[in-house]
Structure formats: C-alpha cells, structure tokens
Length: 338
Image 1: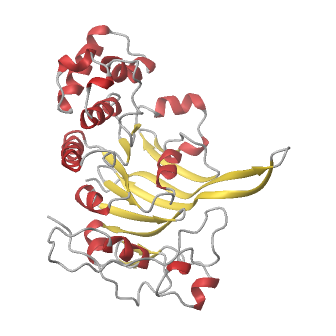
Image 2: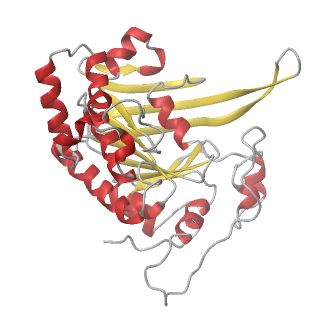
Image 3: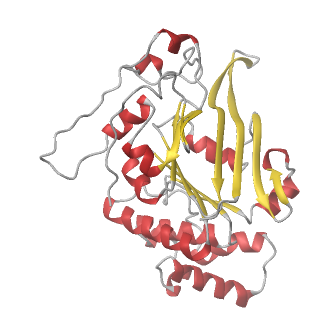
C-alpha cells in the first residue's frame, strides 16, 4: 500500500430539498451527508460502515459525481496532480470515469437483462472509443478469466447466472477500463454467506494484482474486518470514528462504534453475548438533534453533548473520534478474526 493520497474529501455535503404544496416550495432539507472528511491512500481499502440510512451510499455516489454535491471538495490524484471532481464539467468527467468505477449492491438489478455478458463488459470500452473487435474479444475473455468465469459465458444473458456469478460479471465490468479507484457499494450483502467469502477473496486478489484502491461500503462489520486497512464509522451523515481496522475493533473510541461491534455474532455458541441495544430510533436527517447527533441514544451522554457538536479529533496516532469524552471512556471492542 502506498502512502500517496489518491482521494481526499473535505466537508462533503448533500442536502436533498423537502418540497411541499402546489408550488413545490422548499420547506426543509434532508441532510443525507453533512460534512464528511476522508482520505484514501493509493492501494488501500477504506471501509465505510454504519446503519442503513446513515449516508454511506450517498457518500460513495457523491465521490463518483453520480449525484451532485451540495458543498465540499472531492480531490482525486491524476497524472497532472490533484483535481477537484466537484467542479468538473461533463467532458472532464467522462475522461475521469476511466479511473473511477463502482460495483453495485444488487447483482440482479445492476445488469441489463437485455444485454449479453459480452455487451455488458464491452459497453464502457466502446463508450471510451475502443472499436477494434479483436481487442474487445480478448479483453472480455481476459476479464472473465480474472473473475473466475469462462470465456464461453460471454454470449449468455444475466438470467443464466447465479447471484455470485452476476456479481463477478459486475466486477469484470468495473475493471474493464483499468480504474485506480473502485467504490464497492455493499457488494456482498445480497449474496449467500458462502458466496460472500469467495467474492471478498476475489476482490483482495484483484487488488494485489492491479494495485486497486477500494472504498468498501457495508453495514456488516464482520465483512469489513477482513478486507479493510482502515475503517470509517458513519452516523447520520457524519464520520464519527476513523482508525486502522485492528485499532477500531480492539479499542473503539466512540460509543456508537462500541454498540456496532457488540452486534457482531460470535462463532462460539457458548460465548456470552454482550449486545448493546441502543435506545430509541435513528433521528431523522431532516431534523437532526442539536449538539452531538448521537447523544439521544448514548448511555454516556452528558449536558455538553446536547449543546456542543464534537469535532472529529485525533485521540491517538491515526485514530480519530467525534466524541467529547473519547479520551476518557474505556469502551469494549472485539478481537479481530484471523
């Protein structure tokens, strides 16, 4: 893994307007992403975890400019240096698409059922100007072999494949343009557990072979544990903890992270569960609480938590947390699995 920064995000926000009435007046905003700061090094896997609805997928799509940001910088390293994706026009974005790709969550709906595997994989190549039939044929064969499928599969349609095979096709499609960064948006959550491990191993092998950088979005911490170098925990549109994977699992600094880790199932049925059940529901991103957004559900909350929002601060070397008492609390983690 390189120490050179490939992606750097500053104060990234996406506020969706709430419109009502005959004239569709804007009466508020859903703060889906509300000031995210992350950095990803070349060759690294950064896991992005949190409950459903916390803004993980929106963050990934903002980074790719699949949706327009409300505010913030998205800096990406190209040959000419760092460029701000947030300010690029359509022509500039098209050339950037070669370097940034996405693996979608649902392998069933993300593949056009009317297109063959050959058409699905060659489409991005054709869009970017590759029309030589021999080159396209060889590229498809090579990509299918890379992801564990056979070249004979190229003329079949998606319905002929299982969920795991379809996700492999999606991975081949994402690799077609030889990108630097891949946003993997919950790429195994729709798959059987036995198939999840195969796809995770495939992603790790491809990363080593091609020097890929992953932003791996998931809500299952036991999956993220195996593939991530560092992990960012997201709650209600903000990063609340960021650390090396081992440090975060063994020594969490934010109460929300502690609660998420307590939900990881144990392989040993005789081991006593210590599940932390959070009080109440996740607040609405259209009307977030004052101060620390987690304080209504936090067992450690004090008066300052209701009044003042904590900054994401470095508690230990490389370990950041947005909690007023991160340096004082002794929270329970888990031993990372081998």
